[in-house]
Image (cartoon, rainbow, N blue to C red; front, side, top):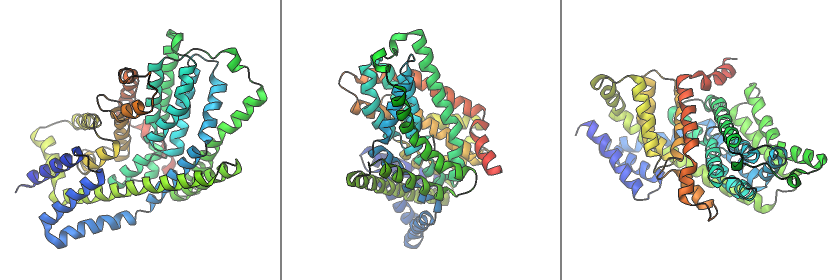
Length: 441
């Protein structure tokens, strides 16, 4: 049987299993193991799975994953994230659209604490959304703000998705995280600029808070500012030593986890329930990602053995004669298409064995491509009809916000994200300058 047909059968079987509701790691791992056994027999097939497991266990930066997830859950479960929104509420309520701008700021900080978009969506829907609606903000704009802001969780470091990409693409996690800083902040700034312009044109979309809401003593404002700045202090304590080369990435992640735990204890919020919930959620998500990475490594090893990557490279560059940039754009479009029914980890694991080696063969930087992939996932999250964030928002939004409102709310933000993607594609140094500067020194 031709290797191209074997590769096609593997992909078709995997997609069929995913459509039947099987877990991502189970579908991918099952296809990888069965294909390896059929192709190379007992000895070769077992060796592929075993070597993938050993490679995973020896990957030292993987220790950052439970550390950062634990840090995020401690800050979330202990309600330290609530202080952030109160700070934005008090200090920015006097501006048109100020609470929406503050929500974007909240999402950026939640992203820096957790690295998962689901956390930002949950906090934004439960804390920010009721306040925004109660203050007369337009429901379509605020649902778009929360969806767009929460998507920053997979781009702003410490991004869990970029850890997964680093393992599959064999790229340094630290460089990928630093590469996501400027694009993430740029995108947040573009969201804020859109809110300011829209509320300037139509003030009814984001009215200024009443004088009663803003009439708070300066001492209380300063107290909220100190409380809200605590996550920034934790992030600085964690990242400054790493950026300056004083600690490794794993050591910085441990510092961040201990700083968050200490802050919760000092504020009297580290109860037994908070600790148990944080540990339980950390264990569940970490194990899930480890199984996904293990399945992806095994699947990729089978593809390497088949030579499928070189066959696809030859198809695009020699038979079809496509320009490398055209191939890259087609890859991004395929991510958006898959994002209508798959989440980011499933998309990456399914296509990484093909796309990552192909991107390297075409001469593109794999760290830069990791940021392109992540931004494209953000767009796919919000693309109808089955965007991941659309259904999360529908599950968490109050009854007065319909699915039609949610669909209509994301259009301007998708356009802003597409513009950000184009900027990073045209000017790769937007993503690469910071990691080159830090690691160059």
